[in-house]
Image (cartoon, rainbow, N blue to C red; front, side):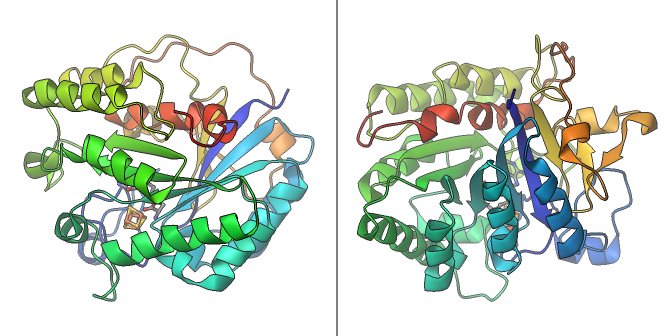
Length: 345
Ligand SMILES: C[S@@+](CC[C@H](N)C(=O)[O-])C[C@H]1O[C@@H](n2cnc3c(N)ncnc32)[C@H](O)[C@@H]1O
Ligand code: SF4
């Protein structure tokens, strides 16, 4: 049965330097290189080669992998990404590209995504306020930002319309912090206005010792406003798909009780996380990665997806629920996005 979803951080480099990024910042890693297992860095010292990545992608035919979310770093600034997408599609795998949206200003990139029948494109945009977005998601070239993301989304939607195609589905993903709570509903409203298909406001995930924790993290102090904003969003019945109705409750649970039990978690059964160095984890939760014993560490290098993701039976309970996990629920609910008829919420 094809029931496995991969979140695949394909490459480490990025053209933006988002201050809260899971990959940290290049500046801090130049001073303090990352060494811990599973720790990510845009400096990309151990990224697999294009040949290794392609060889693995070609093993997916006949495997249990149904859908791959290609993220990073920024996947669309790495030219071989189109060969990887082609290999995955030939293997019968659905492909959703997660991008910061700037590369969508390149007509060749948009044309290739359409030609390869990519199933979804999730574009990150944190706010309807360009200044807020560009403060927290600055471009390394000092020029690109909010406007180029909007232009990129419009270019992709226009090319899709010109092709009279339903695919790729296009959505906006926003990172919600204590400083942009109104964007929980404002960005999905913008997504609807642009003609997108889905919108996902996701809570920022920061370790308590992260330099920005005090400035950005959501805590129990924000529950009342989180609840109010999500109620407005779900009550608006926008013509864009939102995460399931249980999602707002999971967000508030994660920010009030940062750890807890998840019954029959999909992590390690139908969801896996692959890092740019090829390492395979049950999910991207830093708690779960830290708890992974050495004998369970695996890699896609020289591996075959049919063996690596062989069915493992029942999902196990996980006692490591955290804000990292909340961001996986919208991924695991993606069939609703891909099968949504235009204009229906
Ligand atoms: C790591 S990025 C990779 C793909 C692409 N570069 C992008 O920005 O969309 C994948 C998603 O994670 C989000 N993200 C990054 N750091 C985060 C954090 N600390 N907490 C929550 N989401 C985060 C990004 O905004 C983006 O939506
Ligand atoms: S664009 Fe994506 S990968 Fe790049 S720094 Fe921002 S969140 Fe991280």
